[in-house]
Length: 400
Length: 159
Image: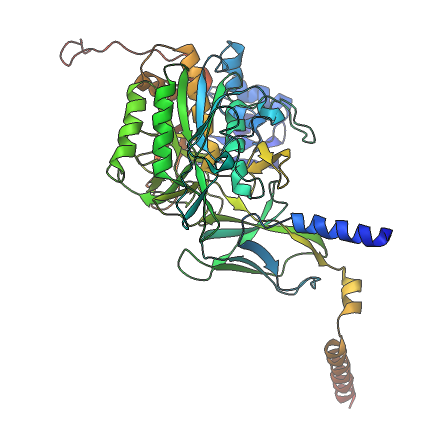
């Protein structure tokens, strides 16, 4: 086939893949020959993937959704995290409800709810915790990936970097506390359980598409529903109400186990990609993956680059920053579910999660121990075209 | 008074740049350092919590370029990770550590790679400046010895 090229492109830079295909730097004349060649089924331009929301939007095929008017409008995503800076320019006008569940235990942990009062509800209750600790900016970064509003971020060269579901609303719930022994900002699953039950109550007054949990711990190679049956039940209640609970799988670079609570069977577990592979930045830091994973979404490009979204400086000012990890991957899927909910408001949750796989990209985990695990990264153009097939009982279908 | 006030404001500004989390900070074995000679980068965590750590060129919160993976001081949670490098060219660098915190239920952690603040201005002077600043007796001695050996060799061949 290369012999058919009229110029010397084939001598310049040709990379052959194990799959049927190759990469080539070609002249326009060469491209015309390749496009018309009987052995060539597709010619596509190579793209440099950048770790910004502008390219996340391309990866998730958000323009296809926005072009049809689907931005997540009318639906909300609950962010159970370190709180959200609702006054951040990236998030202005997006936060529709707030709460805080951060229970203090004397001499063990300190509540990080406003004024230390847990639970707290109403405007300001779900604000980010102590900005002098960088962990407290985490929830704002996650919220920006879901519903960020600014296309061209000041000081950054990229445009088109709005959140994946820029029309969606945010329910900001702060659940983190400060462990007094270590000073670390952590969350208790008892507080998360309260948050899940609060969201279950909110469904009466708010359209809620998804709950995002960009947090976790441990590694589990099997479903872990019995680790905290009450939490598992709270998740199942939400799922039964048509609200997806999305969780990140963690960043311990495991090819065969994921963190808790992502390992709960009814949770939509999200692992991370960088470019077109599983995110494996370097040993010890990369996406956890397993057969329990339901979807893949952008987590980073590697080499320390992450997803550019809203952030908070030590002095409490709104800024922007790159963060990497499955924390960034999960909100891509939560936002996609908000867009799908706008498209399919009355369909069941299994229909929506099925739609996520339609037209999706297939990502192969090439790590040792993954056994070539295949997972899907949603593309909204295909997902929005999803049509369910009518159920035909076994034996009732005419087989060819 | 004015210079004194300026001094104190500068000091306050430095104080406001705290480590990313209380107890995690990154240090270097030298500063300024010598290009081509080993530099030990270290992230220290007190209490021990490191699951994995990378050293990255870049500011906290911004993009970065991976320098290398730190070697943990023991089984996670580790208190320390170190990386020895010798490949930095002369220049001024800001280096942070990206790390995953060890975290087990019932406590849960954000599933994100945490970042420390960058080492402030890790300086590797240019070759000429470095040569000026380093005691060079040993290298001069070696050069003279080499010349002597060379001279002796030439003499022996002539004879």
